[in-house]
Image (tube, rainbow over all chains, first blue to last red; front, side, top):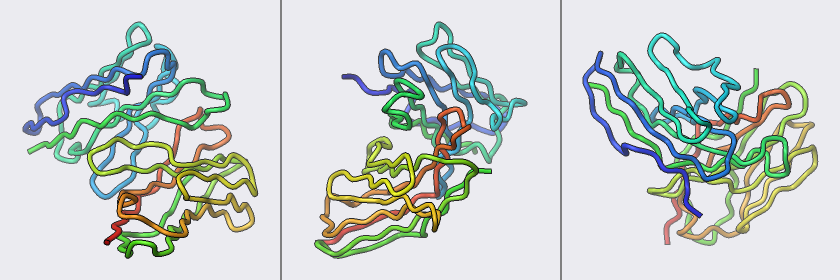
Amino acid sequence: EAGVAQSPRYKIIEKRQSVAFWCNPISGHATLYWYQQILGQGPKLLIQFQNNGVVDDSQLPKDRFSAERLKGVDSTLKIQPAKLEDSAVYLCASSLDPGGPDTGELFFGEGSRLTVL
Amino acid sequence: GNSVTQMEGPVTLSEEAFLTINCTYTATGYPSLFWYVQYPGEGLQLLLKATKADDKGSNKGFEATYRKETTSFHLEKGSVQVSDSAVYFCALMGSNSGYALNFGKGTSLLVTP
């Protein structure tokens, strides 16, 4: 079974530039998450989708971050304009059946590492 | 709000030593608790979980017991191996969180031969 795919793996940009990250979840997984992991910290949820609807985006800095999940499959996360403090690894995860027996089992991609100079 | 606190790392142990990584939580209601592991160069993956008080999660020789009275979910392994070297994250899913996870800061473990 293919895992969660993310691209690009690494990105270096200057502040005020824009960047986009792509995620393709495991086939059949209805729920998709974007997490931000700053060096030395645990992952922090940015946004959660159920199919193509947003479940939780309370911690997404909406003045600069946006995310979409068209057709309920793959997703993009965009940052525009980037700030120095956005330097982090952006993790995408998916899960099969929220509320079912595997609740809480998220499958993570390897992440996209962003450096803002 | 919901939060998880885990012990600072890095933790360095010799092979076959006993491992404990402490994790305590703050939550309203009845959360589910998890340990995730990140091996070098790989994505986070679920190690074990417990969904109610007094449950014990176990996998690959690791165990953790959900202690409601002490709001803890400490990770233990009786005899660590070099291959256990990784970063371990304690996580919580609140009963009203929409099934998203709150993670601790992670504890890096290095096991030496």
